[in-house]
Image 1 (cartoon, rainbow, N blue to C red):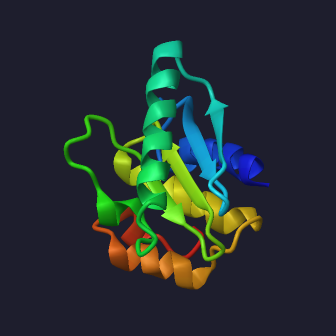
Image 2 (tube, one colour):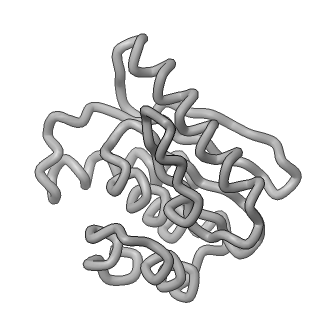
Image 3 (cartoon, helix red, strand yellow):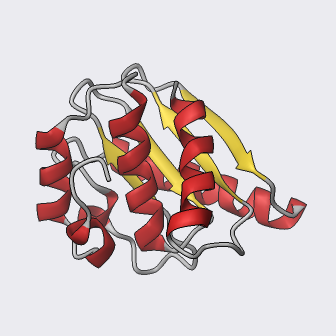
Length: 145
């Protein structure tokens, strides 16, 4: 369900938000047990694929190491040259996206978590991310988009 929602998000991002130049992004999911799975959603050049794969994994691991945070925006690493976005679900999953802008990566992570139904990311989680971030896109969106 998470992968299907990620593919749907990419299609809708192109249609609704003017990101027609976006052909893909990297998705990293960390289970509550700490197992990471990494996925290419859409298409990327080999160089971008590898760079954003590393970025999504780094962001997911960074958030996973900070259990008090719900959003990667709370523990942003300004020294990093590439940014990505990640959210934590109520049941301990980490959903991270890299390959869009940092702000849209966070939105993508939130939408994918909320819409998939595979993890516990409800209205309360959505509102907590909105409160915890300075992301204007996240703050402007209604719950679940």
